[in-house]
Image (cartoon, rainbow, N blue to C red; front, top):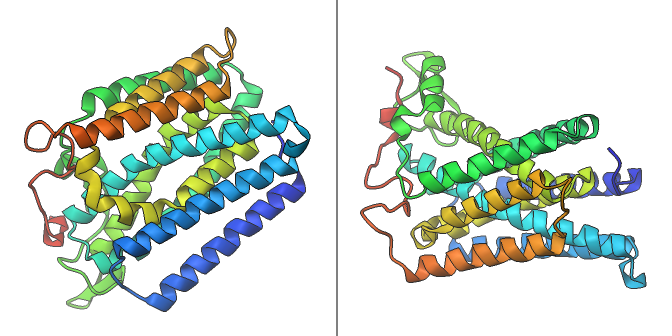
Length: 336
């Protein structure tokens, strides 16, 4: 599939991602296990958002934005819209991560490493799925209609599921992990394996990482069709996804303590997914301008966040806290 990406642009982007990951892992190694403060999370969140907008500014300039290039304006809007959608969908990831960390009683000082490994896996997975999706759309145009219908279905399903507490105990992914791993009753530092009575067993930390990987596969199935509804340019699709994911760890620590305040966000995401799916279904009838998509997405998310702050959750959980009053330590993850 053709796009704006040249070998030089792809190489520079790949080099940037590699350098960013090296710096992040080096900082993680130097700091060791520690609890991430709200201040640290806020600073890193701002840094990643700023880097993302510096990138789109460079992209706009590179494509001839100062000369009034229509392509530069369009691609910049596509990137910003895709980035915003992926960031919004990532909030759902964060609430599921919080649920997993709570369920397995993961100590706060270990969570940073788990998220870093999960993000690394997510980057590889998204790159593979995006390239496959781009190839499928280039070969079979009707795939766009399939993606659109799936997004509408996902949005409706998300709307009806909003406000309901998920039952992790009966989750098939957790059941699958329990059947394939012998799990230790407690943690052994940041180790993924330990020995009990001379037998090598997995620690709950490894189980959490495996489940986070499975969760990201599930969320990728939703988010990747959503970005293809905004643009089919592989370079814009991949870069907007990657920049959204790179800031996911910092955003988790920033929002983990505020999950109850955004209990209506799932309804906003559901509306956005239905709208994006509808846009994809109408692609051959009427091409909705990217600027309209950006304005609609930003407005819906902003309204639902403001309403979340003004309207208290209904009922005991009201969808605000993904885990309700239940709390399970790692001993409950032990395989029977």
